Length: 103
Image (cartoon, rainbow, N blue to C red; front, side, top):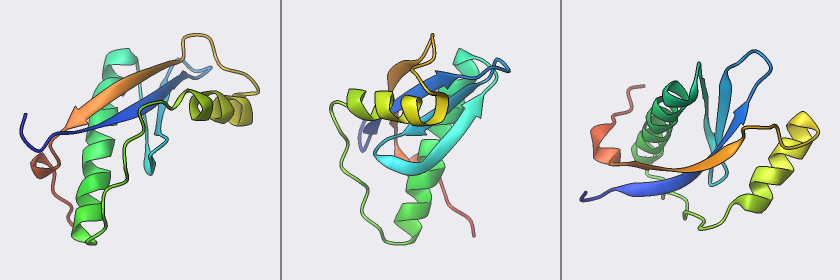
């Protein structure tokens, strides 16, 4: 895919059954989903909307890390006390041109 960007996302199951998502390289790209499939879709949408906002502000996109394991584990420890069972890291790829920021 032309102009595709890929970032690693961290997924954490919550006690209520939802899955929280955060992007270590794009800290404002937080979201959640009702299940794994919904969380993956929400992650792509949140990433696209965040990058569209950054483009509208003429900000450069952050460099994408190849390894976020340390951040994945540190975030879990800070927010959950430990890495929740069922947590995972997934690559999310989008074309930023497919998203538009409206003020």
